[in-house]
Image (cartoon, rainbow, N blue to C red; front, side, top):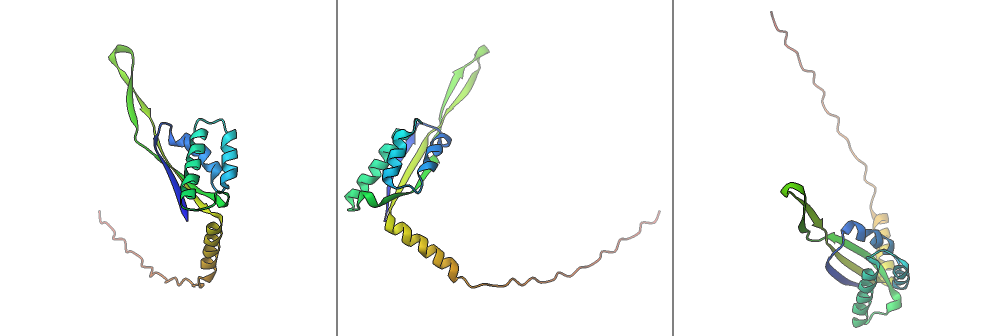
Length: 148
């Protein structure tokens, strides 16, 4: 069973948030929380709270905390706040303040292992199909001579 926790419009660029998000994928919840407590990035405490929120959602559904792993973290682009900075001679330069939408997905260890075995079984059951390639007819074009 998949458990999710979402955070919308977090005021940091998605590119910077994804640096921490890629580290956590596939970790157990305990290891992810330990990893986040040692990170110095600005987004690390936010991810820590978000993972704890997902764990609380799992407990509400009766799933044990120790059997959870981080299945995936999706970081999407949110709305951009547009501001301007005054410059010389009456000009204004744009400032774009990027935001991020973050979704943390947790799953049970047993569910993750059964999903992996189903994928490998599906790959092995596919029959081998030989490709048949038809030959194309080759035609020569006649070039007309131009009389001068």
